[in-house]
Length: 147
Image (cartoon, rainbow, N blue to C red):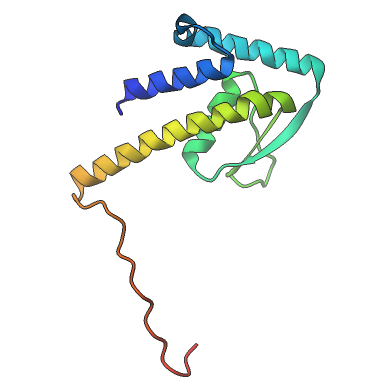
């Protein structure tokens, strides 16, 4: 997959979560963002923001999470002394459950696939052609009396 294909997939994912119904809407990424922002404002009128704590193990997921928050006008943060893998955000539960988190997961899956493909290709073409996993071997027998 090349970058253009990745960007197109990301736009389609976004259009899906924005409730796009026509091919033209799917191509209008800015319109999709605005629909999601409008939906967020509506939810905020109906229910209070609550604090969500998200633990994201890898740097790519963290960066995606922060970017998606900022896209929708949310302010990601962490409290003093929290781990770098922990990110906080305040938003209505409905928005997080029905829109933000499903979209984040789908975008994250697409990004991870892309990064994995790039990494495999670079290793295979630039370092060594055999990119298979390490061989699994039996553990050595312990000597009697050792622990």
